[in-house]
Image 1: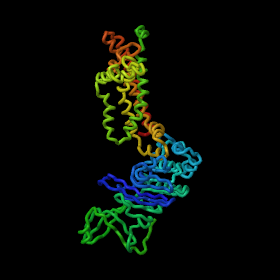
Image 2: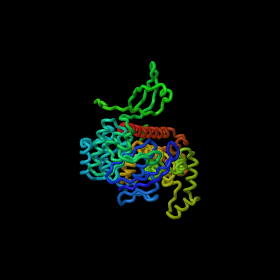
Image 3: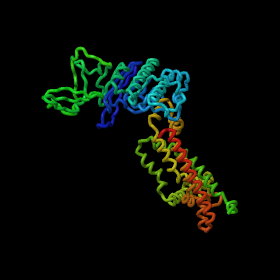
Image 4: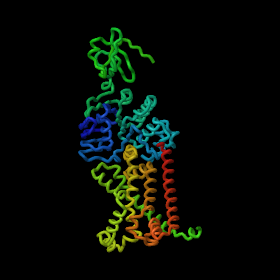
Length: 283
Length: 230
């Protein structure tokens, strides 16, 4: 069990705010931290790692990491941390990166095999692709045999195919080692695939906490499809009005009434929903 | 011409290089913790400390030389202490030159090192701490190997700058042959007694050696940057 009860004053982009987090996480859980940028997700992760100071308490099983202002040094926490920018040791080969953490060759070979990196073990980091670098970084984090694996948007710099591949590997390692994992992520599909629990932060406080289904599925009532988007333009075509809305990476056109056209403002966030009784899914 | 070259006195050059080598080694170990601290700290003492470190860059060598001369002489508590306790005289000898050079060349070691440390990805250092490694191990196994160009610049420029030192050396060391008469001082004296032939030869040697040193640094750094894809 990991018990977190911390408090820290942050000076974010929109002024000072308090990061107050009270959370308990079961051993072996996979928790996703979500929320807008500037909500304190990364800071929370860094406090857990011991890279940033805070007040309060952090307890992991019987070990105390933080009590009041007394903090256990980052070196002694035995955690794994995966950075968004990989942060590999550029002066060391893939294998050396792993062995720098702990001189356990058996474990290093096992990890490289699991992530299909065995052939790259003598390569230098600057000769690897982004996806390969992040897999090395993941292996390096596991070399500590961490009690807690922390990941700060580990996949956000990668393309979608690579992301899916790495999601599988993260899940594989999480299960193989039985690690408790906390991951910051913006991507709902990623969270849905990986996490058992989502904690959503806003302005330093937890606003939602539940399963991915409870937190992320935004439909309520009887709509079958419901998407949030930004109203880009309203065009008048003969007698009807057409709203152009950006949803995700796509633009859609929706016919609206004259009254609606008058009430809506360009740039507004709108919700597009429909009741479809037998939707077709095209591959 | 050949006769002049064959009879050329090389002691001033050897002295210059000996002084530079010792100064560079001492300064490296002094500057390493200082530059590391300056690159990592957010303390309010950072700016004053940086200004103090850079002071030898802007002060006239005569000012620096005068203070060092005063501080190391028997008239000041420091000089008196060393002479009474250890029997070491610190002015007008080689030891004094080393002390003076360490002040004079300090910014040339600290600034490139600090710049190097600041350019290193902070996450890389944090990844090392997370791996359970101390700051000292991180410094030697992660930070320094990833800033070789800055390291080379610091070492070579400090060395070269100490070779090129003149004002401070003259004030603190005088011109004692074989003890404090380094190349730059020797050239000054040759010009004073209008021995232009030797002044030309000595100066030309200095120009060529300095150029080759700097050329070496730039070639090395260019290769390193290519290697790391910068």
